[in-house]
Length: 277
Length: 200
Image 1 (tube, each protein chain N blue to C red):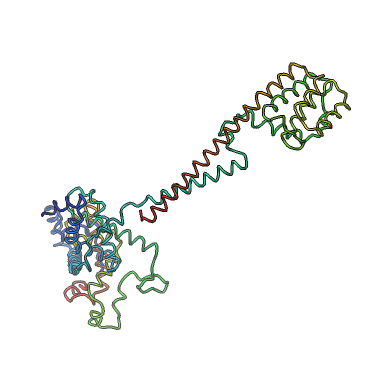
Image 2: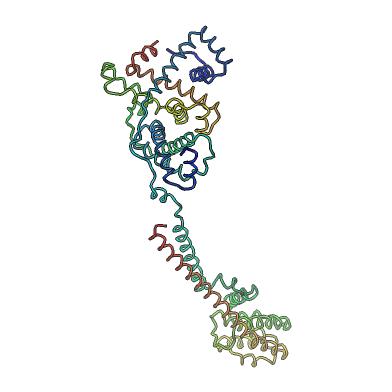
């Protein structure tokens, strides 16, 4: 039988059979039950349903659920092993990155003290020289403006002297030699005719570059400027060597440190795993 | 030793004291789990998990009804297990209709080709009621088990589910009306007194 009872009335009837209504609500409901057959039928249905559910047997536990120390210990925190495993993996990754950066020669010099003005200069100068042959350099030389050319040449020469040792046998084609050659071309240009400048530039390209070459040019170069340039060359080279060695030692220390941490954490992780911690 | 003293000892890490609480309440907890899950294996797992969880979280017990606190833990463990089973559905033992959907009402238990006596032999009444319980939403099921199976007052049941008493009242009423509808389909399985009442 489908009873037309509101949810509110079902709720009142349910609470009524559980004795959960206040005396006032209970009396009101009892009065309605007396006069409303549907409410009476619903009350009987609910009472029977409740009795059926309450007739379910009380089950005994199939076995004892007492806890053992192992059960309790099993659930204790054992998160040490994953931590060390992660730390070892992370440190190893950092070590690989440092080694790669060291071998490929980028990234870490900035971290270890190379100044912004030193690093980018040489590649730019080298790039310019790669694009233009020695002949074109000489032809493009502003012959009518010797002062400016001399200025540019001396400036680049100074900068390049700081970044690169001049004593070595440097052949054109390697990035280290090109800027110096370029500098000499500019220095020779102001007084020499075009052909002479071209010859000079070709000569400079073929000849090994050393410090004595600077002495072949002084006719056009102011003596004081050349001396200052030489002085800088002599002073800057040891300092640069020292800086490079400091950088290298810093990288080596970092590499050794990372390797030690990676190894140590890996050993701890293996130990913890064996111990089940 | 009274229960408060035992609980205090268990809180300090005394596993023996806690196990005496386990022995006191394990039937009640297992009953709650079984009525919630409907299967003895799952019920046993949920019961064991509930006691382990209770031991680990004993410090969060701040007094009041200890059995309500325990029943809350086991009910939550059952919710978790039911959710896991919903995510990994198993092959249903319930029959499917023409559209391939599971038949929610257990009316299929009453085989029209069998006499009521045969049906009574085949399926116990408690199994039929348990099937009706299984058809209820888990929120309704837990309330009707707490009040009608465990015999709790509304206030204690409210503590066990962490909801106000008003929620207990409304959920219980709705659970009972659904059970009533479900049991109407099982009238052949019901005792004669109940059957007459349903038919009327």
